[in-house]
Image 1 (cartoon, rainbow, N blue to C red):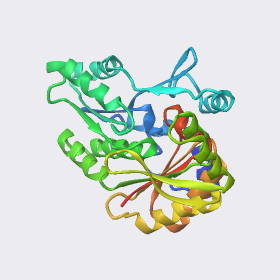
Image 2: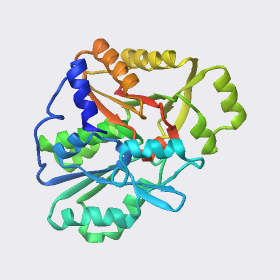
Image 3: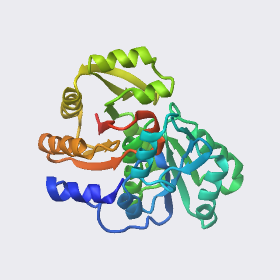
Length: 310
């Protein structure tokens, strides 16, 4: 996410700034890793010194490391101009080995929280790396399937980093993350189904009919970490209102008072969603991200997602 987006939101909407967003903390003894699909704002990554292993995005004969080789603006321009949908692939086991090894050799414990196995082979690559590292990783490398994506995955990563900062053990952190993921809800809507057509997920005829009727899908990530349809509404404004109303009705702030919002190159609408959430749930802390290439390739521009704990 462009940090200016968060700052603009904080200045204009009165978002809360808490310890996730300011200061700098090096979590001693435990190193938290994730992948670029978590779409975490760079200030949160820096605050907790989170390691981020990038997924790969391929377009024709070019390969980009998500979040490193392309800015968000450059990616969405590429997406708009390309007739052929870019493809994504998980990091290789070697990518994870190279990321984990320096910290393991220093005696640190590594916890790696990664993109849902229902959406990607990223967790599998991390597990292969764990096996390949042998004794070096024994009892000190923990790989967790988030069963989540984008800022939903990012919320779990921040929870882990926050607990590490509090001095919790690796076992306590992993258990807490697994408990939290069972309560994590993803809701998102698309402005266009064009990328779903390009990716072969729906037919051109179905997308054309949906466009003619102005139908906007409400999607979620189910208990197996896979995308599924939850509802369909007519009109963009109604789809965004449904995201907010469902979050307001279901979010439980007793244990996890955090919400996530992310968007695919539609800042103004995302800002309005955040404003409504802050009015409806004034005690919640909102973590805002911009959908990067790993997820944005599939959603296309105009996707807005809300994440909360039930």
